[in-house]
Amino acid sequence: MSVETMDSHVTAEEGQLWTGGKSPFKSSYGKLMMWYFLVSDAFTFAGFLIAYGTLRFSMKTWPVPDFVFSSFPFLKGTHYPLLFVSLMTFILLASSFTMIRAVQEGKRENKKGVVKWMIYTIIGGAMFLGCQAWEWTTLIATEHMTVTSNPFGTYTADGVYLDDEHGHAYPAGTETETFKEGHSYLMHKVDGEFIQRRFQYTEGPEAGQIQRQDFG
Picture (cartoon, rainbow, N blue to C red):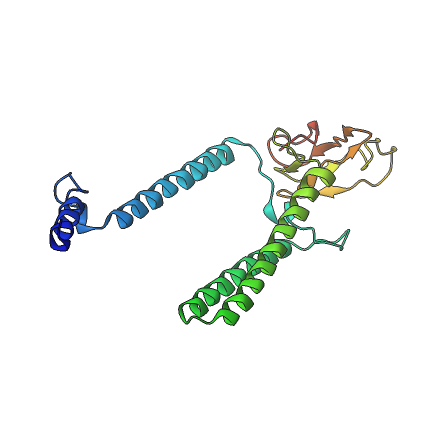
């Protein structure tokens, strides 16, 4: 078989790869599959967002992000709303930039440049994973959050505490702590049991009722 015959045979076979008629939007197979991936990914995240919205609006209260994500590594007892989250976002964006630079150096066939920017990318990725590990360890091991229990909650009106942080009732005549509507709380765990402090709303439709802190 001659070279011309073989080439024509290969060309004929390539022409038979698409048997569904005219290619949609005159796009290649790779581009079409990429659109399938993007659309399926969009549906996946849409499902997550819909589930989140349904759960969020079906709950009476919802933890305030500024309160839940207010801790910072090696700084105990401090309150830095979303500062650690902002740091992780910066690290993620920076590592994305270094990855782009590595690709650019690769197109220029600059091996040293690729290695340098890839090392920066790996360092950024390791830092981000370390931050994630610390955050989840804090939520699970220190703040005792699980898949089925959420110790964070939010008050729906102004009120006063009837118990201290250890769950003991305040003595008569003692000045008690107060809280405002929208304030969040975290139930602490002592000896394997959550301390659900008693409180009393002083405003709103539930004013005068004695309640206990509950899971969010």
